[in-house]
Length: 392
Image (tube, rainbow, N blue to C red; front, side, top):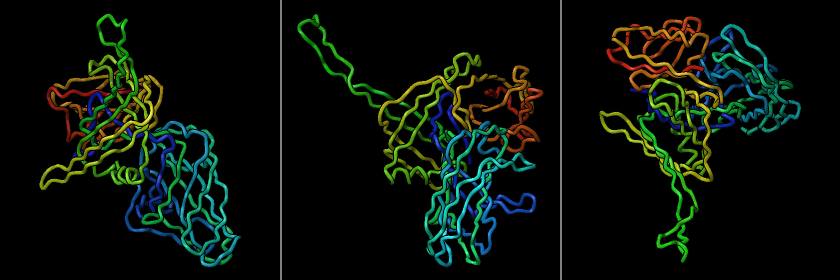
C-alpha cells in the first residue's frame, strides 16, 4: 500500500506552530550505549497503557524521536510544556520530577535544557504540567531529539509514570511543523465572496455590486496511509470541536523546471466539517476530509518543505530529469552543497531522502558533495520516467 502520495503541484498541510510530541512508552527505540529508549513521536499511540515505576532517585524513562525527526536546522527558543501523569505510593511533598532535553547526532547526546521541578503529592494518577525554557539551538537536519524523565526525593516511596492509554504523556514544543495530509491524491481550495447589489439611478442601466463577506473551504482525499499520519488525531479534534491551522501549497512552476516562480502558500484556520474513511473489501482504503475556513486566510511566497518540517522563507531550487530507462543515479552539478528536501518520480512523492548509505525500496540518497541522487538498484528509473527534486 502506498504511504505517501501527494499532488505534483498542490499539497495540503496541517500546520502546528507548537508541534506536540507524545511519549509513547510502549514503542521501543532500542538501546543506545546500554540504555533503553522509547518513542518520542508526533503520532500518539493510543493502545495499551505502558507505565514505568521507580523506588529510588534516578531516571524514569528516555524517549527519542525516529530517525530524521524533526528534520530541523534549529530548535526555536521558547517554552516547552510537558504534561504527564504520575502517582506516588504515599502523599509526600518532597518527591519531584523534572525533564532534560538532549539532541542526538547518531553518536553522542548534547544537553539543551533542563525543566523546572514539579512536586508530586497524589497517590492516584494525576496530570502534572512542567515547563522548560529552551534556548535557540542550531542542530543538523539528521539530529534526533531526546527527552529524559528524572525523579528526586523519593525517600523509599515508589513513583509510577504513566504513558499511552487513558493517561497519555506529551510535550508541546517550539517547532513550527507542517504535516502533509496522509497519502493525498488530490485537494482543492475554494474562496467565494458574496455580492451586495448597490444599483442606483446613476448606474447607467447596469446592475452594480460591492464585495461583502468572503468564505473559503478546502477538500482533500486520497489513500489511507498506515503510518506517518494520524487520522485518529483528526477525528478527535473534530469531536472536540477544535479548529486546525492549514497551509495550502501551490507550485507555481507547474513542472516547467525553471524554479523561477516558486511556491505560494494559503494559510488559515479551519473547522473540520466532515471526515470519511472507507475500507472496501479487497480494494484500497480511502479517506476524504472537508474543511470550512474560519476567519481570513493569508497568501505568502514562502515555501513548505515536504515531509513535515519547518515552514521557511528560504529560497529553493528545482531540478528535473527524464530517464532513458535503467538509471539508478542522477547528477545535478547545480545542487552541489545543497540539501535535498523533496523528490518525486512519476509524480509520486518519495517518502525518505537519505544523506548517506545505500537506499532500499522506494527511498533515495542524495550526496550534497557530489550532487548525485541515487535510487535503489531494485527500483531503477523507467523509460520516460520524470524526476523532480527540490533543494535549498
